[in-house]
Image (cartoon, rainbow, N blue to C red; front, top):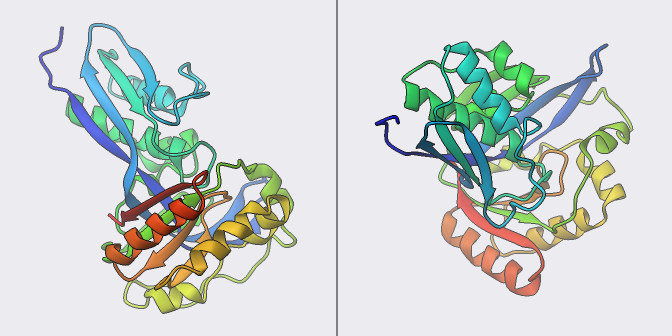
Length: 282
């Protein structure tokens, strides 16, 4: 039995503050431009020493999560073991706090977190970008805190600045949205890129002038997305309200966590069946 200590790592929610679809490759991958942040709130990875490998899922959104090799957490753990010629001498527990298939990178962030945990556990390096991309296009950006520019299919990740002290409200109506269906419903795959993308140019006013190109088709397919964005927009002191990723989770940006907390409390009271969280950027 290993004498290593238990490791706990947060799998931060990934929020696409902007998402511009600017092209499509011959292999079907979309060319994207997205300003991404990670949040303090997320899933939790618990890694415990053990003689043999095991994986289990607990938490409010554990139902329906596979525990076999179809789960990115298991794939990520095996990638790390193979890369460093290690045996998986640990138990991994995923505490699932984020809704499934909700546009905030849950599965990709979980995979990124388990690789960070195993990097600590074994004192080894993380995979390179190509290895991460082979697991999932969103995984590289889930490794980077602060405001990050993600381009290409997800492989080009540039940190622009540290995280601003904004408050963020995440809201999901507990309705699923199919990512392939949303992309297929896009009117155009050749949209305008973001303007003046630089760390010193990005503020809430700049963000308000950007967009998520997947928002209109998602709203057409799932009207609840529009209802959520409207509800967030109506909150006092909300600066920007938009859908994240391919939905259905939407976010509201506030100048500080106090206003975000107040908005989240009100939204949860008015819409008790929605998933609502106030959090900060990391």
